[in-house]
Length: 137
Image (cartoon, rainbow, N blue to C red; front, side):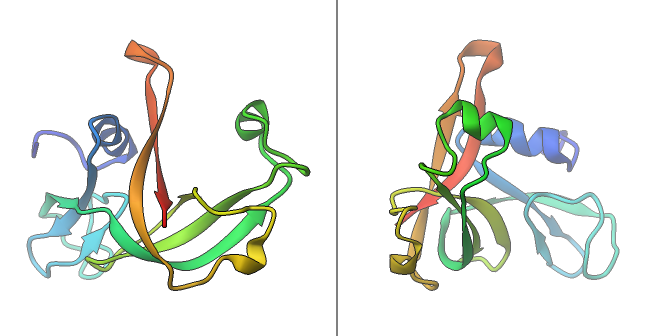
């Protein structure tokens, strides 16, 4: 696992394997998600991979009604919004991801602090397989 570089491509490969992987500084212990080759805390460059459990709580969110083209192709837009949120993982780092299993048309019912669990959303097959990280209550 340490052979993979600490970048977005490696992060995506791990998502395709059903793993949430970030980096941990060997010097100060700071965690980063997505992974970083240089510590954002002490600027050290001795990093190691760490796997996150996928449990956390909703720290912030927004309802998106003007969908970018890839989401519009999936049917999202003004009449079918979706939710994106900041999730604080139990290990500490925060990650931005889609929030599923909530009513995006009623954002007033979504509560900050709601416990969430990671889900891996897959599109395509074989070499075209893409996995994105989402969370649900």
